[in-house]
Image 1: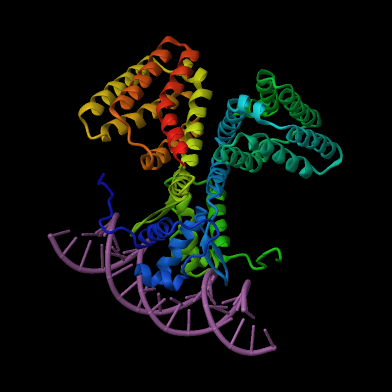
Image 2: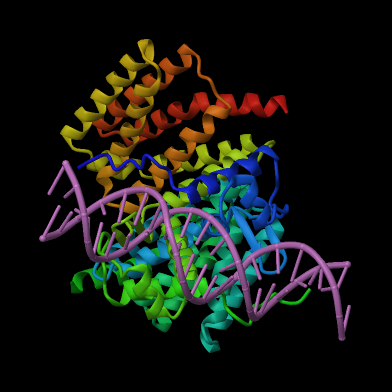
Amino acid sequence: MSGTRPARPLLRQEVADGIKRYILQNRLHPGDPLPTETELCEALGASRSSVREAVKILHALDIVEVRHGHGTYVGHLSLSALVESLTFRGLLSPDDDVQVLADLVDVRELFERGMAERIVASLSGEQLDALERLVTRMSDSGVGGDGQGLIEADRAFHALLVAPLGNDLMGQLSMAFWDVYAIVAPQIEGFTHTEQAETVAAHHSIVTAARAGDPVAFVQAIGEHYAPVRRRISEARARS
Amino acid sequence: MSGTRPARPLLRQEVADGIKRYILQNRLHPGDPLPTETELCEALGASRSSVREAVKILHALDIVEVRHGHGTYVGHLSLSALVESLTFRGLLSPDDDVQVLADLVDVRELFERGMAERIVASLSGEQLDALERLVTRMSDSGVGGDGQGLIEADRAFHALLVAPLGNDLMGQLSMAFWDVYAIVAPQIEGFTHTEQAETVAAHHSIVTAARAGDPVAFVQAIGEHYAPVRRRISEARARS
DNA sequence: GCAAATTTGTCCGTATGTATC
DNA sequence: AGATACATACGGACAAATTTG
């Protein structure tokens, strides 16, 4: 077995930790400039190669942002790494992709069901109107469009749904899962027109329930919203 | 401003996509070996520097695993990137760290409240006994110990809680947030003995509710479990 | 136990592409 | 348009870790 403990910690990891420490100690904010690669080399006692590899690691985590020919900056700490990681997991598992998708839908529904009370309580009138407009846009895009407009409207809808509850992390996670779903799901689906209409109707029910201030109806509408997907997942699971 | 569109896509990104494509097309699983750096160089038409940077990006996302002197392998697709990213976000925000912590507690509670019915329904007798043993271990570690045993028992408790519900993603997310919390929270807290006892008692209530098959009591116990933390967060928020 | 072979880790020098002034 | 500063990319060399004979 051997406790695979590298007595010598990898230099690029030391450098990456050093850059993180620099950001923390200097209380930098997203967008603030960082020292150039050459300066980081002498400051951290490493070669360009090691510094560059460390910077690329931090870039993958959105801790650092790199602009060619301009410089290196503090990143925006988004959840892009989660999206890329989960997306690849969904695309990889060749037999279990149904399970991955099912888990993903579970998580998405958990977020919106669990936040139901707070969502209906904090949605403003303008936000409800905006949601309504998005539903009609989905309906219009669905019948004649290429489906692209429908997808964009759906993303905006779910983003607006979790926006007003004053928890940035919750909203970002919810949309990260939406992004992953949008990439992984097409491997399975292919919605019929009636299923699309069913989904649009569910979105409408969600707005209606929110406008009425009825958390129970809201939760039920969320369930109807994910019903077509769950049906598809069950069918795909039955085939294997 | 110009849509900063690099006409030339960065080579390391091309290489990273190429490696991902290689894994997908060959249907590789975590732990399977990948071509050596030299082989990837000629296969993807890039220098070793670019290949190495690409590999480091994929390593940060746990899509690839690298063993010094041995080789490169398919990674285990864990959520380590999410943990590192969120941890840094929590440590960075110097004034808003209270808000980050509050958001984090919200998410953790959402998971365990939202899964209440399924958790209560699917916990086996042996699992309930194991949870009970962990609670007594927390109690023993708390009074005389260094606090390290308490933390480990707490992690094992929450891991076992979400383990049986057949959704890997949900369990991994829940534990990822536990890990982030364990690193970020100490910046604020410092629990008193009475608060520790309160937390241990809440864990006991959780097990009792689960054994009784009572989802309502389970949810209430979860609320009690997070009550001391929320109190601390409110106090810290009031100070600023 | 040792030595050789393989593979990743690190360093250096140079040339090129890009953005800013 | 020219000059400067910076990241990007290449290739070669040597060090360190691991496996195998």
